[in-house]
Structures are given as structure tokens and as C-alpha cells.
Image: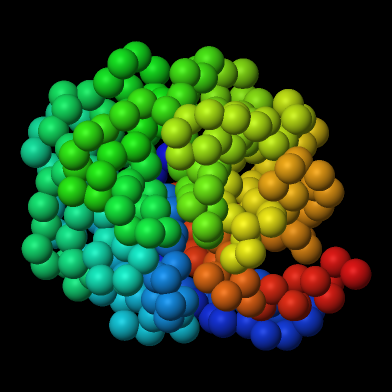
Length: 295
């Protein structure tokens, strides 16, 4: 599901053990339908950035973890989306086509000021992911054909191609220790698979073993597990799963139906996008509530 996304009207942080209660949230009445593409926790876990299409325009927003103080950071009549935080929480990188043509990677202060452009290739550069040490940004680009994984300095210098996968590569995310990058690859068969590689592009590991349709992976706080959304049997229904970084112990995470989910930096919460196009919400559930439900 690589479609456009929108703004949440309200968000409920849940600490109960019942998953039905955990999934409760409400939207303000008489608001336009919104659809969210992605979300990202700030490094300290107090805020969440996300991209949303509202009034037929993609923009980047940020809010407190409890859903308060939703702030629109971008104001351009362009598609601004796919956010990632710098490790110090002071900046947010994102992709945008605001200067015409294909997407490029931009960076701004966490309050939306000081926007600057990092990539200037005529091809599509998108889905940035900031490294834990703050020195590098991984991203995907079709500058040499299909979308592949690239790595550049945090200021946009010295871009280097890391992968030569069959098909396209999407949604890179760094392990907490910076030793590996996870992403998913699409061969056009609706059976996307999750891989990890080292930051030099070596030692590619197929995590999901060729089973099912698997998208939007991310890491647990300790780097031992990968969270992702999957349709394992081709039913067309995506749900959240976790799997060991070595591909072992693939397990559904409670009963969360979502195409995009992220553990909080401390591992205590999961934020996810609930609903379907064109109206979705961002919800947060306590990770221990998920565990209790699963047991």
C-alpha cells in the first residue's frame, strides 16, 4: 500500500489490557476525511511526526504523543511526506516535489523553519531515514533505474548506491545501533519482502523468507525484532506482525489491523495507522496491553 495519507483529529493513549479498549479513539465531527501515509516518533518519544493529505494536499505535521498540539509544519502546494527525525530531535527530514518534477529530500527544523534541500538529482529521491549517529541519511532513489537504497551524508553530500535488488526498494529504517538497515522490496507480484543490509550494502538478509506480502518495517528498541505489516495468506487484509531480525519467530502483534506501525523509542508503546483510505486515524496502544491480549 503505497498511497497518500492524512491528518488525525484526535488520539488516545491506551494502557488497558483489552485490545478492544486499546483501539478506541475518536474524530472530531464535521472534519474532512484524512488519510495518513506514515508516522515517526521523536527520539525522546514525546512527539510524533506524520504526513497527511488534507484538503487534497500532502503536508507534514507534528503532535504531542497524547495527540495534543497538532501543528502543520509545511505550507507548500506540493506533496510533503515521509518524515524522519535527527537523533537529537532538532530536525526533521522529508521528501517533497515542491520544486517541480520528482521528489527530493529536504530537511527543516522541528518547528518547520529553516527548510533546505539536500538532493538535486532529476530522479525521484524519497523515504529518508536518519542514521542513529546523525551523520548519514539513507533514502530510496530511481536515479539509476528502479528505486534502490542509497546512502548520503546528512548534508546531502556523497550519495552512494547500496542495493541492486530485483524490482523496487522502499521504506528504509536504521537499526538502533546503526549496524543494519531494513527495507522492503517489490517485484511487482504483490509479495513484497523485507530485507536487511549493512550500511555498506553488504550481507543482504531476506527476513520474511518469501512468505506473504510484507511492508513498512521498523526496528524494536533493542534491535532484536522487526515490526511490519503483512498479508501472509493473500486475503488482502494487512495486520501488524513482529519477527526476529534473523527471520525467526514471526508472530502477529495482538489484533492490530494496520498498514503502518512503529514501536516507541523505549519500546513501551506502538503507534499505528488505523482505518482505510480515505479516512484513517493515528492510534497508540501500550505494548504490554498487546502482550497481555496475545497471551
